[in-house]
Length: 433
Image (tube, rainbow, N blue to C red; front, side):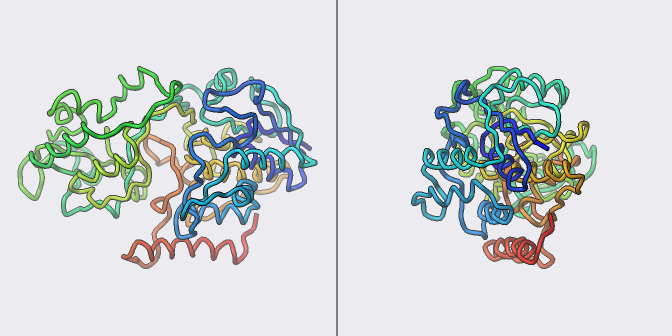
């Protein structure tokens, strides 16, 4: 018995390690060092490209809880991260070169893992985990495109910010659809008066954008999905005739049409998350927080995802994948990593662990892992397989995707601690694979 894993990023390495640790042989195919993507520089596995930070360490944070849960599954990357850590306050940051070298060594030294250096140009037969990342090479990307059909494959991530429902100030907002078409709660509307809008516009125009890599730039993305800051620079009223148009809406507080409106649309069926309609952006994350908090109803908003516009190949997982990361239309085929729509280093690694374990279970004729949604791993797997998610976009670990506690805790710090403890209790009391 052998399982093939394609890609030796964090997800691929975790998948290969999880499989091998359960006594099954692995063929790990990685195109480096023979061929590299534009983002990669080293020849090692699990290369950290954009940052050496694996985010917060404390368990009462979304990122910290995710890493804690991964440790219960024997995570290779979390283990290596602690061995290669560097001082970074409350974050778990690593020496990138040492981290990659350590993961590479542990993978190559494992007696059940065979590492093959070649470009994989087709999806292998048998039980397979595809973990090729957001910059999948063109031949394999074409095969995935054929498998998924073009409508279910995205090559560029042009996404608006997402906020938690409970952080929206409904004293400054109202629920309604334009011209009263559709359900009353389809949209939350965040109105501006003239003075508020002019301040927002001036700050948006002056805000600092993130630097784009050459492989991120694609003209048709910007023409078909204009960044809100670019639109703002075309004139003071351009947004008011675009995504912020107030026509068909009446503010119940004033009885009049607002000067401008930001509409928020449900991101999931539970209504825990909302995205800012038409607010695709390339602003730096700190600038998004600063400027978008000038929207009156979002002055205290909790952003669980910031807007992005960059090269990011990912599949429409809710239509294609089950919660165990298996492909619905081909038994024994699993996807893992950012290609599934999880966002972040540790999120990718987590998906690799679960895809690997589930691939082993499939090979042995056993049931896949089923994790409750109140765990961070379970919530992320539920998100990428939830067919009610509209306009599917990648998502990282955040407390907004966890179901609420039975008792509401007003203090956010205490609430996060309780949410984290609920998950920890589940794992420590005995979880069955």
